[in-house]
Length: 195
Image (tube, rainbow, N blue to C red):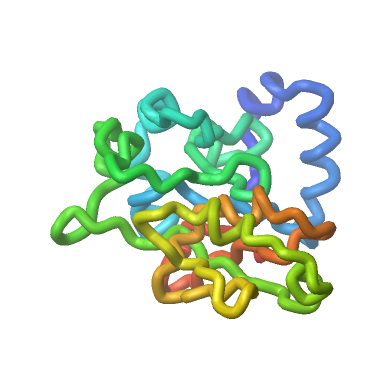
């Protein structure tokens, strides 16, 4: 993410934003984020198309879509999802896409929606490896997606079905979480940042 800010943005910063800006100006650590479902795949095109109107977040029935602040430079006021804090519920109606007036969020062919990321399962830290019965990831995966199923009392992740919503990560009961969401490779979805 380009965090070069304008003079106008600088004067809008709160003290917390300034500390964060100082910490990230060395560009050694990128912030992980996902764009909402249906986001244009090219980040530059997304930034130039998004009207920063907040219609997507207003339409989201779960209030998971957030907007970048002034410390984000070009990305200021654009929508994002942090799946470990506020996972997407991958609604069947995709209200966020329907509400977008600019086309920055859009359906694909035949009303399809491309994944926003992919889950990765660390079996070594999974509670089921310790003999603990746990199916939290499978029960929280949206039923119309069904990317995580239980096979012989252990979670089985079908990456082809996974959409990267983050519900499995959010509800994982192991510490640290045995699941994480990774951005898709840039050729598939360059609207994500970090890993």
